[in-house]
Image (cartoon, rainbow, N blue to C red):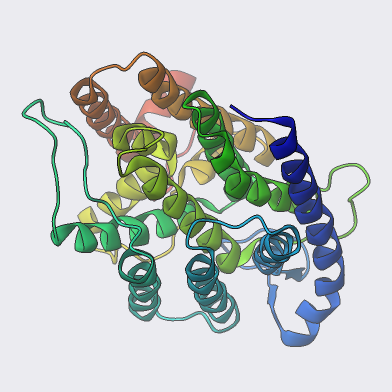
Length: 361
């Protein structure tokens, strides 16, 4: 499954990504202030002072440098890093100039096209979701992939609301992918996700002010959340398609189930209110947990536990080879329950806590 000769290059690549990320995170802080790439406190952002938004750029740089230095590449690596460079640039411009949602969306579709058309990494089969046989695409697979890529990118972008959440959720998904690759005897394929994990960990150390990393607060920024979203969807499509797929498509959906459900529920709520579905607000899951009385750290722990639960369901379904139809119907039922709970969260909380929680419009 994984030989000693393959293990040594993996360790070298991961540690290279880790240490390069640490260096980039430190040296990019003064550059961020000079370029104006910093996050200012607002009504939606309650942090103190101006915080550098260079976490995503450092993670991307660490993954790229570690891949080049150790010769451990993603499949279609050059196109992956091309698409990633564009998404990083888009995120930096959005962080600095607050781009319009429609303009940002068009650019994301352009990045998705690099993945689907140029890299030929697109969805050709969804599996037997409805019990009538496998759902296969021909040319429509390209267009469906574009929608999926943009959806996942925005799901991770939208969930990035409190310290550690986007990075932590990314680790949950990537570690789940690594586990599934190992048990499916695709050990060589873990190189890519493990390098990304190696680059994300030091960011989390600075972002969450772990012991030894305090005093250098850094945010991931739109560039980082969109980069990890692109990376995850790139890997999931690659590992669910073709004759040597490591997991079924429905399993991949469960791995990223929480970010997808949070995005879908929030967009539905905005649409129902007659608002733009891309309009930012304070109605995400982390906002609700904090308003319900949890500290940001406890809210982070609770949400990551939920993310682990979703991923765990996907992993168990894959290990036991539970019917794809059952897994998909279960996902849809969970999505309905999640959305219903989110739409009526304050009523539910008042009932549970005896009217101690005040509704927020």
